[in-house]
Length: 111
Image (cartoon, rainbow, N blue to C red; front, side):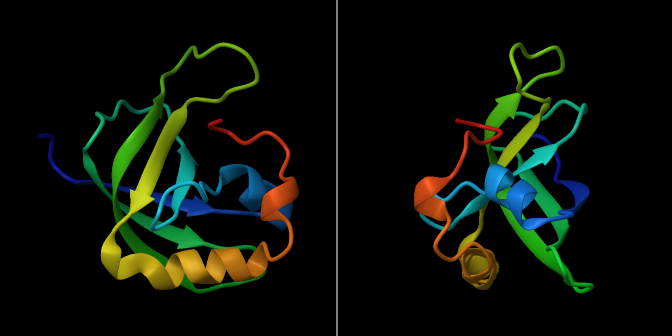
């Protein structure tokens, strides 16, 4: 497996967070736009800033989704990152920000 890589993501607003969040993953996950190649299962370190917050959250996870550069449709290149077990608190913070919106979400960056 490839070495761990690091990314940074600042989510500007709640609608973007709703499109990027992956609630169907048991520990939560996030779509991270990137043109760099990643492999499924690769470990990634993410510094995540949520809308309206200045604190950068440290998240470690594994790549479970890859949208390569040149992907068709409205999709953008990037990866889906499944949060690790120690990052449940990040999932909880995201789901608090998205309270009442997850069940009526518009199409996401992944599905």
